[in-house]
Image (cartoon, rainbow, N blue to C red; front, side):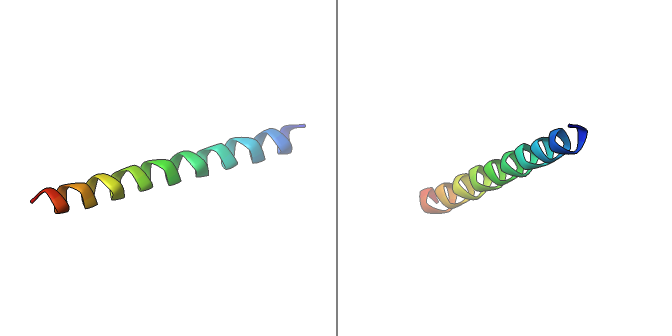
Length: 35
């Protein structure tokens, strides 16, 4: 049960990092287009 919880936590952590990276990249592209 503990390994499955660890897998779920690491999976959600990976999704969170991917979401933040996508948001930062999108904001960066938006600011480049605004300039």
